[in-house]
Length: 375
Image (cartoon, rainbow, N blue to C red; front, side, top):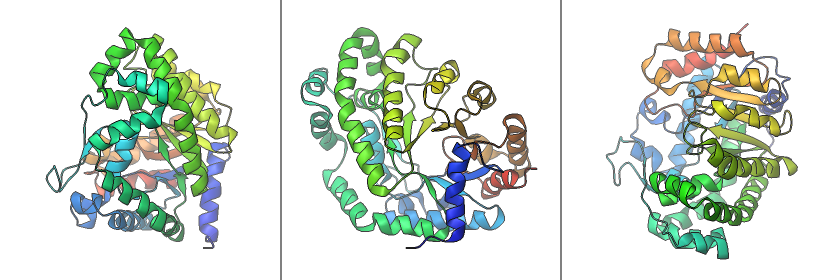
């Protein structure tokens, strides 16, 4: 389909924002579980029906857009959240309307599903061998097949729905570095112990995983024609691991994924949950004006701007708790003060990590309205 002139202008603004050439703050929707309550449906109905997930998300965005124009969407919702999260973490996901009540949010049921000897399996046979062993224990393989079949049939159709609605997608995929995958498969407490007791084996396993991770990442993003890709960091945050572990087992792999994307004409969007203050300057190692650092409210965004300057675009960081419990005036004030302090060049205004399921609609509007009305 032929995108509208407005869509193309918004898509160009994404690139301009990464290059610090935007002439106003860029408003970016993110709220994977936010639409159902406002749109009058249960989370179970929304989460377990991919067509409804897409259509309801776009309808919710349209309601915001009437009051506060949206420039783009961080990650376009396509349903099958349990399959996506399981492949990111190798952990079972409990779903509303199945293992959980209909209006509960999906939950990661993290347990040790990767045995000690599986490190050798990865080292000797690669990451696909580990996936083939573990995935059937944490995911219904029929549902994985349904996910793949659905994307083949409806992936392009859903992408065109966002295009028709006028919302370019920043990130065409979401991928985890090996630290995060192993942490989910081993469980956080066990994996952190591994990092101290057998760091060389952990490193060897991560090295063995990288070729498959990068190949899959590039194939997915290229097939979608995407311009950027989400590289996630959660348990590898500076606040959670020692500098020695971070330097050895976290950053080299995130950087390698980022560089692989850049070398293929794709922008990495480093999605950083938790506090990354200690090592923010390391993102200066990524080529200038080629990436986005997406913060969740726990990392000091003002300090990040001082360190990164115009080297890296920033995305964030309106706190989810403010969107859920604050007033529109408080949200508007937060966004205005944030832009005052760090400037609008190279800034995507979006919820910190993700808008929560109980975010007030009027607060979502206030967030984007503050950005659009900023002078």
